Length: 446
Ligand SMILES: Cc1ncc(COP(=O)(O)O)c(C=O)c1O
Image 1 (cartoon, protein in one colour):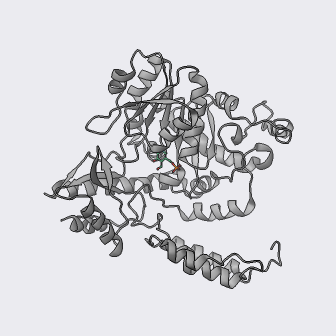
Image 2: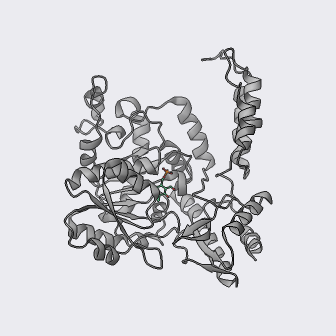
Image 3: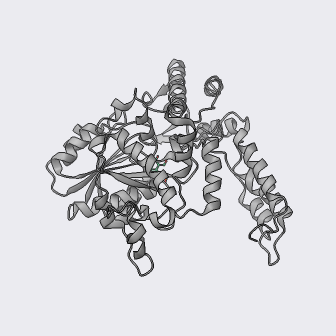
């Protein structure tokens, strides 16, 4: 199984060709049928093995085609993925090399490359040079990790103020951490404001944490981060910004102003696998004061304490640059290396340019929906999400619409809800989504 003589046939050539092909064109895919898949996959694990040819065919004919292509340029649902070629190849290498990026001792090179990205984000946010962070496997674990530190700081003030638009992972994290939430309603623009927050939690002595979004998921709206930071200051509460989806857009100088207030956060996250064109499984988690996170997340034990002595000190300053001390993950692939490599290859401006494509398409789509008599925007897009109503459509029509678009190869879309009403939702992110899709979508809504 290992080494030069591993019996895998011409797997290297087949796999390389498959990856090259996928990077050229990702299909929209299909939602696989459970009974059919079970029938085709049962028996694929045997005592003697199927051998490389049969196993490869099972992958290419059964496994690979029965998925939806989040990386398709026509995938406009949930939060799409559009990993760059450079990020994808580096991801393949990360998997192969088993860089154990939980600690400096095991993976100093990989951890330091990841830190370049963390520092870029911290600098862009206006955090002090003493801030730091680590990569985690995704936004949910990033939010959980940050909120665990927030809980430690909040002490007995166990109530967390969240917007009614907060991502589900926040609610889940609070539940896991035994924290209680107070939900603050957003206004007609789906934005959490400092004023709304103050009117709900002002003067309360049990609120120890405030969470805002640097781009909410459903409507793609950037909360009033400055107003929320003011309230956090008044209450002495921890201020966490969930920027998993949208905070990458602060890299755009023309949008930086909209994220004003992020510089006063105690922690924030950005998912490079969303709008920074990295491969799946990547969250940058940043703390203003990383020492507070170390106090919460450092794991101790007979075989791992060595991570914090000798070489584990990193640069000899006494600070151990161990990602595992900053979040709830020990063994961890170097999930920040793909984005670091893509940034190293193409530079920041190419990434900004790619982000701008989604914003431009969202604006174009919003203009088209505005002009259509049968549709109405829920709110003008702040970033790359367009949320809209279609007069006269019930859930059945929305479902038909989604089925039709997928069947015709136009797009993968998924209706959403806004204030209990079924609405259309389109997320523009892939830098290769063609402008012509706007007319195709408009036609489908007439
Ligand atoms: C704002 C926000 N926070 C958190 C998450 C969860 O991230 P992940 O799916 O990487 O766990 C998402 C995912 O879409 C998100 O949009």
